[in-house]
Image (cartoon, rainbow over all chains, first blue to last red; front, side, top):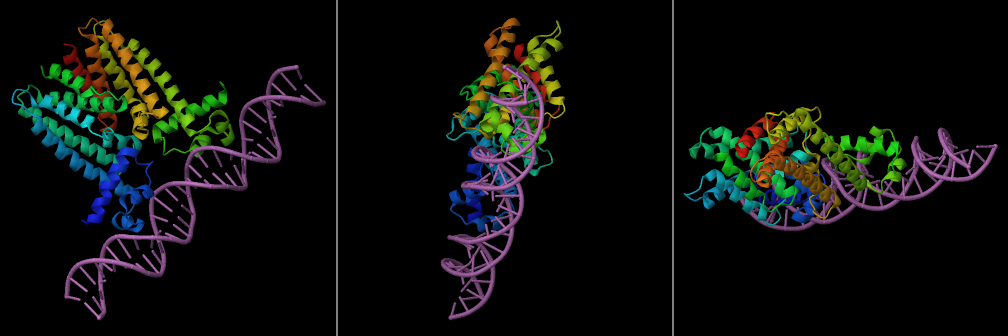
Length: 183
Length: 183
DNA sequence: CCTTGAATATACCGATCTGTCTATCTATAT
DNA sequence: ATATAGATAGACAGATCGGTATATTCAAGG
């Protein structure tokens, strides 16, 4: 199952789909960019949708591990970690090639809730929520789950605002709002 | 310029693109659903992108007028109108055929900031922000522009959460957060 | 050395895509 | 009644789509 070719294929497709969209990027672009034969792709994946699912799974793993580590890295004893989350977002938004949340983008193109791709997006968002809930519970705030809901809403809002509106200060604005929210 | 056929074409395309996505829905589907000849479409629009732009413009008009009216309709003297906004969102999310924000979805498929479609999405979001700012300024809150930023972030977060996660309580959660935000 | 399995290039399939062309029809207005 | 403008159906173009078939090359392991 695990193979260097397969690995490289997923990474390449991840880049292309993230930057160009799922329907707009064809198999030909993926194999050309990856420098891999057409049949090698279909040897590892039954269909384009399977490849998309693999890229989303990898994105989920990569993003969550980066997200958790970045919170630790940017944390300071003086600040509630719930607020540090928005510094992490700010770093993300400023990264080269930032194109919003790949899962929101995927849901926009595959809106049928029964579609496995759509299912994968919900799963990812659920994992993010659960991690924020953990932080909230550990930060000594009252009604941690309510606060986590509000924090996640601000996070999603910041992602959308930064990407769709090109607002470079979305994360900072969200952090300011979060401060009032935590009280 | 204005024509019944053209009008009907825009309405039909609006429905189909909103439900099915822009790349995934082809011209053939649009003309079949509209019951209109192929050449009639290309007589009114130079290209598919022009048609998409027309649908986004109509969506912008329809949504904003509905949004403003719904706020008035659901307003009560006892409540800050900034909070009423989330009751309006709740109504929207519960509507049949709800498929998120068409402009967020459009930005996901056309992420190039120079693309006219992308430009249209930013314009729409700017208009929404400005209306929320008006409400904030009229609601006697301190730092109305800051508050408006927070409200809009919660709105965008609620839209994303309701659509991507299928969370039916996203608007209510956002309203709860907004209450703390207004103070 | 030989076998086995993976990767390769390339041709090909049927379907669909956006967009064009043409020829016919219809309704309205002069 | 006739001229004009818009709508029609349908064929067509050229490109691209996702996916398959085949035959060849290559590298590693026994």
